[in-house]
Image (cartoon, rainbow, N blue to C red; front, side, top):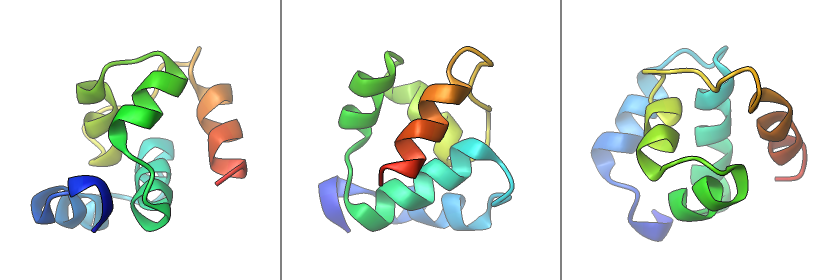
Length: 75
């Protein structure tokens, strides 16, 4: 696992619904080795927010959805 993705985070991401945009982003970032810090910096949110998206606890705010979709398209 790149960038210190914990086994717990990866497991929670795999168990979460792949239909959620944040979970899709998490899967793509984990596979591509893109750090949570890089995602949070690019999208202007906290690292905790990114973790919550990755595990399906929360979804990106409507204002962030286009940015997340663009990031997904470019991974």
